[in-house]
Amino acid sequence: MDLINKALEFETRKMRFPTTSDRIMAAREAKSLILSLNEVYKKNKDDKIMDIMKRLTVIKQRIEKRLKGKPLTA
Image: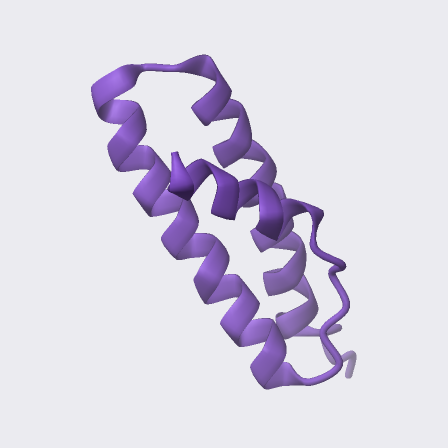
């Protein structure tokens, strides 16, 4: 499963994105991996795939939170 290997490699990659465009690209990559794994999960119903998707979702949410930034106070 090349897709699972890509997901595991993305998960273990160092999550340091110095620029906004790097963060955007990482969030998009995570989203595409999650959606691709979801298609495989629909056919196989393998719990390992679900666990990988959950971990990738947490990483994606952290990246997106960093993209939004701190709220401005009045």
